[in-house]
Length: 171
Length: 196
Image (cartoon, rainbow over all chains, first blue to last red; front, side, top):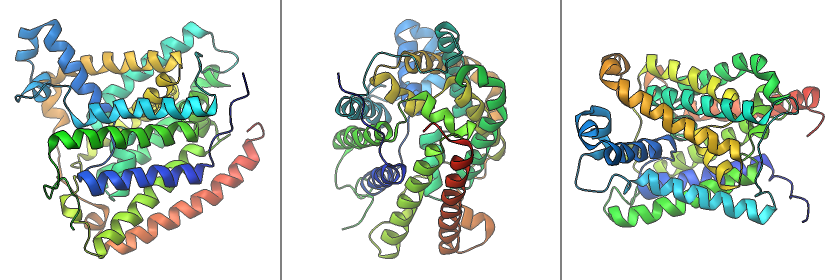
């Protein structure tokens, strides 16, 4: 197998990403997102697993109310496209392979556990913030949204504050 | 022809889902192209060895911001019809902090973890399971915290409105911050980078 291709120039990739975001604004009147797709998916699973419980929960009801299937949501389709687009790019560049991303000192189980914990933390954070890096920082940033810029600054603050404590995982 | 097309009824919900998939294709393609399917590439931002996250993100923000600004000025895009997430200062500051910490713990953000999983990264999949678990925890505690997390809402408000400055001035400020940031990022990478 040939060596993976180098990554795209960050400014070119940024222009590409920005034009995709602009297309979302122009076509749909909304930005990109990611975390919201998981809210729909989890609500759908909750209704399958425990219908009565899901019926009584205000959060799940927010995604289950209405006649449409909960997975028939804009962000769910967008995230399916995201996965397909990333796979296409990864295959094209020879970067798609089964692997665990970690630094040389971290064990695989510790890394997977940390990835799980980080996902949990971010799910809670994204709900409080009403969006994640895609829906808030990127999309809201480009619309000069007040809350998005406050959010974005705190993401960088949190990341730099936590970095020293997590060197074991990456350095 | 006026944009946003969906809001002006040029197509309906079903076609909107096709648009969602196509937009997602582009989104995922450029995330992976930039290297954002790799946790090591992403967290390098916080160890100052590779500032591609900042560069890509701010280039994208500037590109889309200039786009909506000029399309708005030309009368082609009605910015009032583009959805703006309402501002809740407290929850958004705390949420941002949690996301920043979670980024370095987990190695991804929700969107990039999908790109990582799609290209075979097992830690990306573990992150996605965490995302589902965290969503369940939030949903199950929602009735107890909803008053707190919905407090202090300011509605949809932009930086120009909040600061009492013209839109164009803020656009110029963001462009200046981005260009200054790109220059600074290059200096920082030269200092801390090395193994690119």
